[in-house]
Image (cartoon, rainbow, N blue to C red; front, side):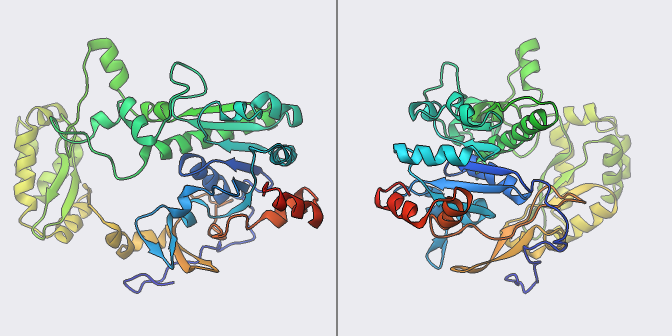
Length: 417
């Protein structure tokens, strides 16, 4: 497949298909919708886990309809989050649907769910019930505020979690409303922590003999965990960190600077040795010995002055010149890309971060690559998420559970699948 600029991207199938997938043989059931739970399921599927996504027959995952644009009548975000998964329909609100779910979970390693806290219990499917059928089951539960505590009953979205954790307040400019980052950051962070918890719990089960356990992931706590030194600084001194715009207070020079062609570039040279290289590259080596800028602390006190000097230099040069000159000098620097720029940079092609996959309905798609990259057991993208809900009903219900065609017909007639 080629990019809009005519560049070839690698196929999503692995270059070395003989290499084993690190999570091959692991079965995961995903009971969730939209972002946090499905993103965790996608990450496991990327590394070879068999992920069975369950959707209600009458209420498919809304992510099927989410996204900024449509291609051949379909949203494309779905193909990112649901790639490598097997999709079935099952109404777990019905008694027969719950029986089928328990039969599946009896042969499953991990359950991932991101419903509101307590939903499984209200359905009669709480952990103790599930463990009666499979004591080794790892149950990853992603919710807004956790599975207990004073806010357990509150609905929780990523935006609320980012706000209440203190993360949103750090974004933006002093005195202005704190903006979003442009993505559902809280959901993505929670997914990553869910994966961490799942892998730790699997290790505890399979190596140390610990039975299955609950991995309790809160969106608020996932955002809160990213606040670096804000907690001890407030506890010890009462200091409340606030937004600092495009840079960080006291870290200089490290900011965005506009170049002659109008492009913004990041120049980060707050470390003493790096600043000396920056000063030389700008033709101003004397700045490194100026008492105002001679060390990290001094530059922090004179942040506005030094960043104005850098800004006045950058605006005289095109972004390509700035990027080439500073990277040659060993100064951390890079332009602020939009997606067209990403597709034009060979980095993303050569590092296999733009992969092509073929969908029978949508044709060839370009999907984001797999992170992280493992040298011996790499992850891979083998197919985009199926467009049709229940695409794998036959495989799972007949193949895994051994149900007959009459059984399947009865489930369909009853609205269970």
